[in-house]
Structure formats: structure tokens, C-alpha cells
Image 1 (cartoon, helix red, strand yellow):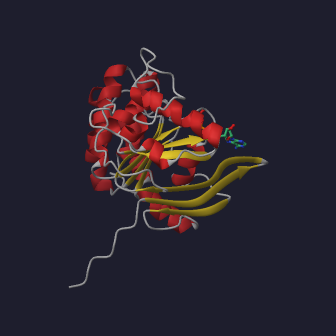
Image 2 (cartoon, rainbow, N blue to C red):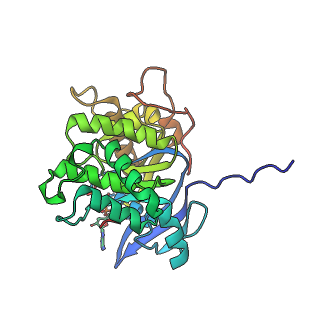
Length: 293
Ligand SMILES: Nc1ncnc2c1ncn2[C@@H]1O[C@H](COP(=O)(O)OP(=O)(O)OP(=O)(O)O)[C@@H](O)[C@H]1O
């Protein structure tokens, strides 16, 4: 019997560098992402959006290797093939204010070449999954900012993508819908590779299997949320009230990375049971190298 060929990772990035004029936005980055939810953390300007734009095939790398769903998106036909299997919520989700929610999501489904007969049901399912079934036939211009963001998530998942790239999906969402979105993220991660950039460290702790912390275009660490929570070290702010273990771990990792230029994987590993900040699906592995309308 022939063994089945190994499935390539959804994302394989090696030595990725992105330069714009004289600035280095991403510096020799390595990243491998498989099925599950992978969080991307980092301060303003760290390069999260730049990385996600490359992974969504809307920005080109200056150098390095990028493979998405097993192929390099280096030709127009390869990019089209990848985009059919990709979902992307950009940081700025542009839309047509006069379209209804149904029309907008259907339009995006059409752009992603979802077979016409499947579009109506796919639209209703995607909109229902983000909790907007009751505004399906409302015009976009009548929605709140948080509702528009959720339509953005609906259009990203309407084609049941194998690779889902979400840039700050919870920006502007109220606490109830953020909690619902975490549950949706976990559900999506069972079927797809999901990359999510956020400033909500606790969203990562609650919904991600792995996390990468970027700083100034470089990777500070890649680990599980439990390892991040356990990595606070003396650099983080003690037991500041209101600061979660995951947030302390994030701060400690960043400060150590800036001081030493590296964060040893061992620093992120010790994770006695119960110290994780609600991490789900963590494997305990050591830190590894790893269209808007
Ligand atoms: N087209 C461009 N030309 C030059 N510099 C750019 C360009 N786009 C982004 N930058 C710079 O690249 C850096 C990384 O930006 P990026 O938007 O990727 O960061 P980010 O981590 O997503 O930040 P934020 O959390 O604020 O959204 C920033 O310093 C930004 O000013």
C-alpha cells in the first residue's frame, strides 16, 4: 500500500523579508502554520499587517520563500488558485454602503468563484455564524462599526477557506460578540489554518493553539499561549491588578527580546498545569522555528 503523501503546511514562510523604500518591514522571518488557530501579537508597527498582506497574496515579499496551501503564489494563476481557498479580513474592510449584507457577502463569494448554486446558502450560513442573520437584508450604511466588522468576517469565511487570514477581527466588537467570536475562531480552526492578528492578548490565550510575537519586523518568540503566559519573567510587571498572565508573558517576552535580541525557547516553556490563561488546545511543544470589496 502506498503511504498517502504528506499534506504541506497551510503556510510555510522562510527568510521572508519585506522592504518598502529604505524601511525593513519584515526581517528574515520564518513561520509555519498548520490547521488550528495561530495568533499574531506585537506592538503598533511590528509588521503584523505587512505579514498578513503577504499571506493574503496582496503584497509581494522582497525576498524569501512563501508557500501557501502547498504552492508559491508567484504567478497570477497561482495567486488566483490560492485565493479561491483563502479568506481574508483586511485591517481596513472597504465595502459598498448601498449594498445589503446579503448582496455584499454574495458579491465576495462570486469573486472567490463559489459555484453560483451554492452562493445563497453559503451567504446565509456565513452571516448566521457571525450572528447577523437579523440584518441580512439591511444596507451596509445602516450598520454599526462592530456589525460592519462582523460582515467582514462573514465575507472572509463564505467560501469555507482552508487558510483564513484575519487582521484585527475583534477591533470594535463589544465584549459579548468578542466572546462569541472566540468560540467561532476555535470552531474554524478545527477545519482550517487560521491566522489572526490582534492586540487582545487574552483573545489569543482563549482561542489560539499557537502564537507568534513580532517586534520591529522580527519574531520575538513562537510558542503556545500557555508558554507565553508562563514566560513573564522578572521583566514583566509583577502582579499588576487587571493584567492577565498572558499579558504579563507578552510584556516579558517583548522586553527580553529588546534587551537580548533573542528569547530562548526554554524561557517560554515551563508551564505547570493550571498556570495557563485559559489556553485551549495547547500541545506543550517547545517553541519552534518555525479582498475587501
Ligand atoms: N507602504 C509602506 N511604506 C513604508 N513603510 C510602511 C508601509 N506600510 C507599512 N509601513 C511601516 O511598516 C511598519 C509595519 O507596519 P504594519 O502595519 O505591518 O504594522 P502592524 O504590526 O500591523 O501595526 P498596527 O498594530 O499598528 O496595525 C510600520 O512602521 C509602518 O509605518
